[in-house]
Every structure is written in C-alpha cells, then in structure tokens.
Image 1: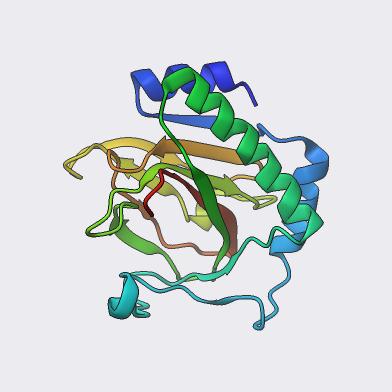
Image 2: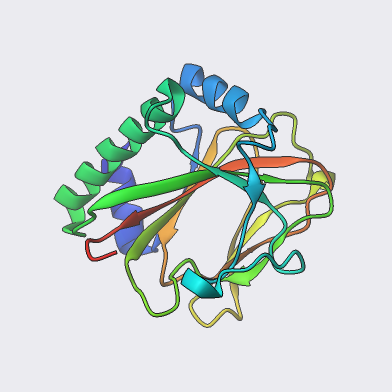
Length: 197
C-alpha cells in the first residue's frame, strides 16, 4: 500500500478509494475465505452496542464473521493493516491502537441503512476500512457504498463494490449506507481504534 498517498488524502479530504492495494495472492485467498457461507462461522449482524444490541433486518441485512488471527489468510490481511496502522500513526499522529474487522456477506435484497461507524457513547473508532471481494460485479448488481459529508445530506462518494477495491475514511466524519444488493455481495469491514475501547 502507498501509505504516503493514503495519509495525504486522509489529511486533505478525509477519505480515499484505492484500486487493488493488496497483492493478488492475498486477494484470492480472502475471496476464498469469504465464500465459505458456513452458518457456524457467519451469523446475522446486529445494530447497537452492549445490552441494546439487536438484529433489525430493515436496517442491516448482512451476516458477519470476525477475522481470526489464528487463520493464516486472516493473519496475512491483519499484518497488512498493522503496517498501515504504523505508517499512518507515523505520518498523521493519529494514535491508532488496534484494528478490528469482520467479513460481511449481503444476500440479494439486503443493504445497510445510513449510519455512522462511531458507536453511540464512544468515539474510539477513528478510521473505517472496507475491502470488496466481488468478482464480475456489474452496475445492475447494486450494493454501492454511498458516503455522505458530516451532516448526511450531501453525497461525496459512491463506491462500486468491485473486486479488490478498498475505501478508507474518517469514521466520525462520513455517514454512509450500503444500497440494496441484487446479487451476493462480499467484503471485509474494519476499524482502526484508539485505546480506551
């Protein structure tokens, strides 16, 4: 990854869309890992935090599986993100402490209503990342990530979930939504956090 370029864009615009920042071998392995639809691994995503967590399909329709550092593929991805964390801390003094991430699979007809990645009552998520793992994705398949400016009224970016594309953005600054997918849509969502989480 071009950490200097990423740091510059985050400093000036608050987000960056990257075309295939990871090596092809790792992308292929992540693609395979995210195609395991085993219900033992994947479970319905929830909204809210703590005791208020609940599954609300009208808001969020994906199933998720948190990355496992014991798995070699997940470990390789997490190592890339650790390199990015260290580089961004050096360049921007963000104080990023760790990274959490999960695979997300949206079935046909699923999306995620407009939301912020900053959990209510906490501001520990500083940077959000999404890596897309969809081969042969077409415009008619939908599933775009729509990113809004801070008030949530004006669209600043629309990202097609094509294979290998990654977006990185300031978590607190950009509400966003996943438009309804018309095909199975796969990705890895992640968050760089500061300590005290």
